[in-house]
Figure (tube, rainbow, N blue to C red):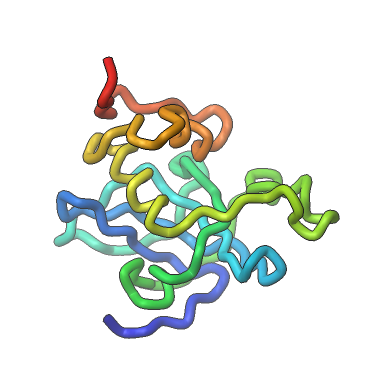
Length: 154
């Protein structure tokens, strides 16, 4: 895949196991936080044949996380354009740790975010992690777990 140079505002797609995509946006760059990218992820699924990227709508954002840049840089999360960042700073992760130089904050692997988004859409198990409620912690406050999720445990 072609290497990309991600920038704040970039809109990208995250491929899901069924061939559909979820849209995301780079909303900040936090070099002191282990060179992470702050990304917002939408609940909206896009069919492969209908990729026309529009700005994220705040009502559709389900998660905002510090993520590793590997899947952005290597093009797995393909950048399609750029838009103004509309996510409010209070939705950014771990803002309470900014003044402490991010001590206490957590960065998520981009692969974890792939699996989380697949689980959110019922394509992977929601409770597959050691902590079966782990994916719940990745949701923004007020975002409900969808009814169509799959669970390993009843």
